[in-house]
Length: 425
Image 1: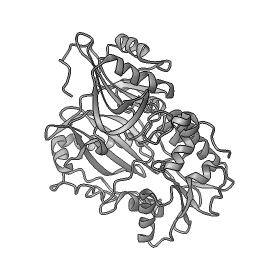
Image 2 (image 1 turned 90 degrees about the horizontal axis):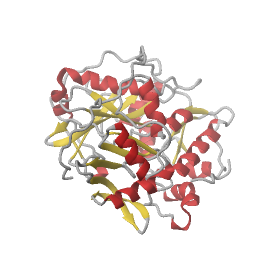
Image 3 (image 1 turned 60 degrees about the vertical axis):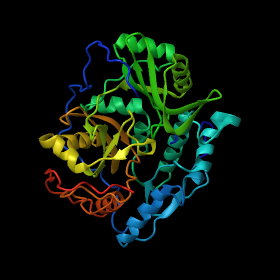
Image 4 (image 1 turned 60 degrees about the horizontal axis):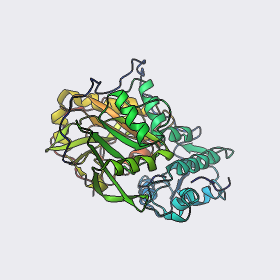
């Protein structure tokens, strides 16, 4: 495959409360609910004897953690197929191997190859723009690997393509009856003026504006409109010299001209806009869940809390207590896990996904925010007590599921734990 010519996302005091047009808390279409969870089947010939390989960035902790899990299971060291080689079209898939697909992120050379041609001389790894080009390059590369005769992949490139397009993923989940936030539909948003008009027509005053192909909250804007037209845009994006840059500090833009510039510069890469759902709280902070689903079962859960609209840990979020969340949810807890499993069932060719579950106030209901193809980077986190991955980290659990594809776990232990989960370091 030739090098892609298009080139990923990188990584308040509230306005006065204002009456809005009535709106549902979540979109839950009356589509047929999946009848059963179907664990992703491994490729034909996969099993204990198939050597493992990883499409990833050599030396990255994702690759290292998966390799450590393989060694701990008594398997040979997985061969690494570098993303940079695949993007340059100079690669050979290790013969007879079972190839795991890892994230291409956090490698400067890979990022520049993907987004550099689109951003030109002003390219910088901190830039937010260029997501559409990143997406095209990654999807083209995965399809090129999938065309290699005899290749056996752990993961479906077409499903990864859907997960990395928030608009397509939202539509897929909604169509399957999975509860998701209400979203703007129709033609792509062209800019600030278009967004304001469409929000007015929809009766929405609090929304999340998300780059369609973004990750790690890059470019995400929590947008609010006050009763007299005031604007508050909360984001980690820094406006600098007509460019958008990622930062580790959450900012609040109250000048409509700045909010407009944000949206106008994000729009060319595609936007997904959805209702801002009031989330449950823990210790006075908003809270949500990252649920890892492996072979159809929710195996690992992290509670994320924040004083900001975004709960990402690198933006000041903190790990919450699993035990406290389970106790707050009470009998609703199994339903929160089932919501994640229903979302994962929409991607039957993906052995693992990370589902962002957004419990609503009171912890009794939830909607799905996103489904992440590479949502398993949770070092030191072991599986839910009583579950199929108890005592295993996310990588060891995936190795176990791969080596025992016929194993069907017993009933889930949904009783609240008595001790908080150890925080990830």
